[in-house]
Image 1 (cartoon, rainbow, N blue to C red):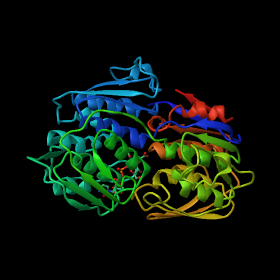
Image 2: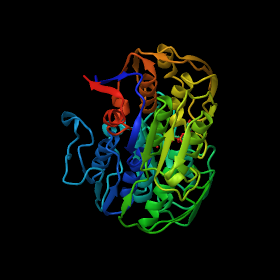
Image 3: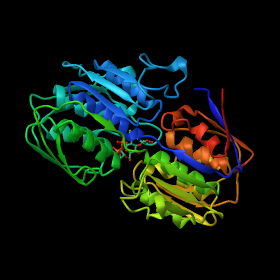
Image 4: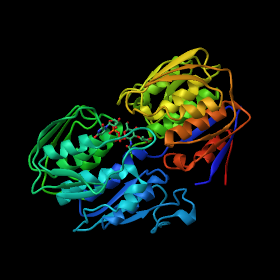
Amino acid sequence: MSERFLVAGGARLDGEVHVAGAKNSVLKLMAAALLAEGTTTITNCPEILDVPLMAEVLRGLGCEVEVGGDLGVPPGDRPAGAPSELPAGTVRISVPTRLSSSADFAAVGKLRASVCVLGPLMGRCRSARVALPGGDAIGSRPLDMHQAGLRALGADMSIEHGAVVGSAQTLTGAHIVLEFPSVGATENIMMAAVLANGRTVIDNAAREPEIADLADMLVQMGARVEGGGTSTLTIDGVPELHPTEHRTVGDRMVAGTWAYAAAITRGTVTVRGVQPHLLSSPLERLAGAGASVTAEGGADIRDGAAGESFTVEMTGRPRGVDFITLPYPGFPTDLQPMAFALAAVAEGSSFVTENVFEARFRFVEELIRMGADVRTDGHFAAIQGREQLSSAPVWASDIRAGAGLVLAGLAADGQTEVNEVWHIDRGYPHFVEDLVALGAKVERVG
Ligand code: EPZ
């Protein structure tokens, strides 16, 4: 907890970086394994703190979980069961015939995303008790749409003693229209509906690539899901599913962070492991700021057939551009802090509108500590770019805010001290090592 990064400003990033699988997919893929008795293997898993934390939740439900590699977790903090003979980046989950449907409070308390076991437990066990994760640094994050969707399938859902509790005699397919294309609600409803009787249609579903990845894995397990990645999901329930092996889609948030780091430091970085069209909105913003952004072999970044790599080059000072966060395919809220860091050193002014989380400007205070010229009003922010920020001690409040502050530190004079970096470790595998390999002067201390 006391670790921090010392970030020296002024280096120009240059080189190649490889991006592993997506945090916001792998955690749901691990939960989906609960839907079938037997052993499921997930590959291309990121070596981040959240994976062993999710493994703890699944062990609490009766699974055996092997996690490959050392996951960048300090030996003392490694949960039981790691290290393993499995290659780094591979997770193997053995699911028993009889599962517990009550997720361990302590384990769930450490990992908000573990609420994604709710759908699989309702689908497989017709009952679930999962600690209510509550809000965090970016918003109140209620679960009303998750519950409403499961109720529509015939479940009794309630909040009792700090937990979301669900039970059902049977689950029956239904037509569900989401108030907002919530990622989590779409995933939980889909994972319950695959084992329900009859057809479920989810309209205004989330379209994130991680949803399409989960739908692909469910189909590999024998589910009947159509429309993964579109706003209408059609699921025909089946009596049972079987285990599978699945490769996690690349992490577009990590890839996007490297793209913005290249632009902020006026460098040239090739990012491997993610198809650029999954990032077309953030990359088009970068092009608007003056960067050259090219896909493998000079292909267009919007070309879905382009390979899994792209290059970002910024030769001069970035220009101010506006950002409006929206559900996919809009500009992702998780790259909003990177947009702020770019705008803070851009030529001219930029405007940021946050439409997904109501409290995601909290980290702006830390940027202002570094001399950024930012004014916020509700979910709008106006930023007047400065030639250079000034180094300062700052505190990460969540994964993305932490990464955004490191990027701001790369564009500041002097050495910035980023505290609470465990947040960053939760979402960015070997972040310091990759930064140093690209020419940055960054050190992990404490
Ligand atoms: C996922 O969170 C991601 N987390 C988030 O990434 C990401 O920011 C978010 O999707 C949006 O893209 C994981 O996948 C683990 P939502 P999730 O349900 O599922 C409101 C990161 O840094 N809402 O789409 O929680 C909610 O409060 C994290 O990697 C309800 O009101 O997001 C929010 O304002 C941060 N009621 C909005 O919808 C509900 O029942 C979007 O939430 C559900 C959601």
